Length: 243
Image (cartoon, rainbow, N blue to C red; front, side, top):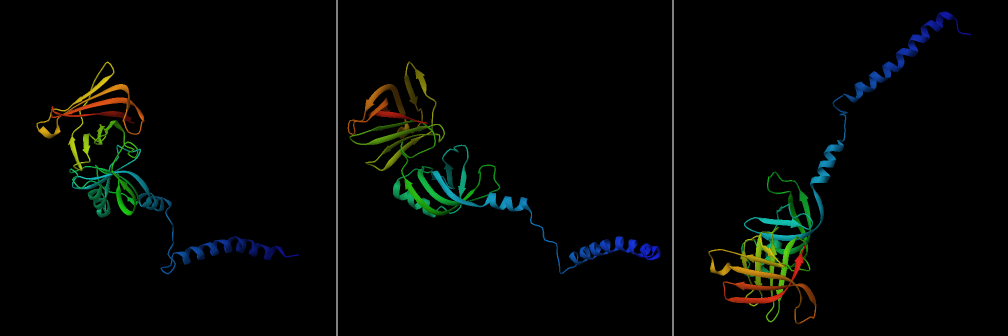
């Protein structure tokens, strides 16, 4: 049995030793050769969020600055950092494109942040997967209507989201462009009338809810389209909604 005198010495030591060990460990961690390393979850989250490489599908155009609008996000515009490949594709598809005319694009790109009130982010092109002229089958940005005709083939896009009325003539490989105007709707007839000073961009487009066939494929559409350009050139065909 331990005498009471010795027990009185051991009990204080048992309390002091753990405190000395903790103090020693803290002192070692604070030495210059042993810096405390803490990984910040917030910082890692920001890096992962702001620099992501993934597939983007949408439309690309260059009005002095390369821009991209992704499918399902027509209200968000991205700036394109490396647009050399996309501009080359645009020139090949639309050799007489007007400034700001768009093409359909599928690509792999890296998304990063950008300090801007205009752009939602910055896209750096890594790989171009597909590029095509816009048409009713591929474009995913909402349009009011797509009109088309045959003999010869032509197509016209009406889009409030893209602020355009575009008539494409493949014989000339040229698009006649004007800004979007609100239609007049009356008794099942939808009429768009542009009133620009330029003689090349005056349209009167009448779309009627009526079954229509393109005359070649035999496909039926829900709308009939009649287009008068500059009061003389007339185009007749069918139309589909673009939403």
